[in-house]
Image (cartoon, rainbow, N blue to C red):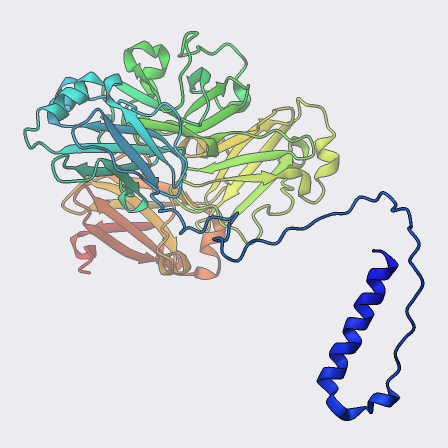
Amino acid sequence: MKRINVVRTISLVLLLSTLFLGCATPIDQQVVPPIPAEPVEVEQQSEAVAVYETPNESQEPVFLAVIEDPPRFWKYPPVKPFGNKIGVINRTGYTLKVFDLFNEPLYSNNAQQVNLLEDAVEDGQRVVVDLHRWPDLLSELDKRDGSKFIFNARDWDNDLYWGEWDPQVDDWNLVVAYEQLEREWQGEGEVESFGSSLVIVNATGYPLEKLFLERKRVNQIDGSETNLLQGRLLQDGKRARIQVSDLGHLAEYLSFEAYSTLTVSAYDTDGDLYIKNWHPTTDLWLIQLTSADMLWSDSTHYELQVENQTGGSIWYLYVTDDAHYQAGELGDDLLGMDILDDAERMDIDLSEAAGFDDLLEQPEETVMHVVAEGLDGIVHHATFLLGDAFPSVVFDRSSLEDFVVEEGEELTLYNDTPADLWFLYLATDEMVHEKNFGNDLLRDGIWEMKEAFTFKVSPALVEDNQVLHLYAYDYLDNEYHKEWKVSDGWTLTFNADDLSTQ
């Protein structure tokens, strides 16, 4: 701005001040600044200046953000009824691997499971099934004849979920919920016991490439066994049906009277081993191999698997080598405060037991003795080799025959009841209080009327002349009870007066 313009601006400001202040200042006291000399032209320097434009107040404001409500949420969009799709929603809490949907005509044509799922369905997820892949199911739905459908679903543990669905009334998003778990279903009646075949189910989660059924135990398997799959894969969720007539020498162990223990073993495609003991007389003939049956090998541990099929509880368990066994030195009880109940099995880590470090360093062919004992004083005995990768023993009726029971006095009983007797037990007061009568002394036999039965009584049971209890049962489960102690003599008769009234 030129200097002359500056002077004019200052003069104007002073004039306005005078008008506003009025007579506050006498006119003769006002100072009028001198008129400056003619301004000198100054060359303007070139300089970039940022210019900010303010919006015209008369124009509408321009917004960069758009204000809107949250979107609607639809977790499971609907499926059009009687279209070509259904939805499957998993609310079980577990991953589903199988979903099957059928009505009565479909079941009549094929009683075997059909899996509509291409992939597993995680908990909380939904999948849409294209029914074009299942023309028979789509045809039945298109009939719209009012028939109801049944669905079966299975999770990774092979647990079964069951439900009904009415396509004309219900949503076409089918929900599989935890409440639909069939807790009582264990395959009862699905495969007939002592029939022409048995069935082994793969519920491990992995394909099986080798499957064996043997009289041998795990530590006796040497590779000479027959692979029942014969080069095929048994996929997870599938089952293998085996004809008894094809099992050759094993057929003799598959009768009710055999009371045998067979070993089911399998290898998956990763080389992992699964093992299960099977008792044809008492177990279902639908045998499931699950992930719980996998055996783990750990170089820092040496685990012995013990299974109790004695009919009573095992309270004491000992493991020792041959030299100590022959000397009667069994060592410490490995169960401690535990009890191994009937039909249960337990893994015992021998590497953690006191004094076993030296034993485990012995040659692999060293014979190890396992002794089990219940409160009834009856002793079971089994052996294994120290070099076995997965040592296991089963205590059952046959394990009684392997051990020379401690000598005792013979007790002779006479059956003067009006029936043959099928079961006989000897129990202490403590055992009766716990409702544990021990083993059946008759084993596979029947104590006929007017016949005698003799057995040896362990000295540990008759010390201090304690009262013992004898219980006998006929085939109708009528109970005969007698109390006995050593001072009563070593001959005893059961008669009709001993029939329990309770």
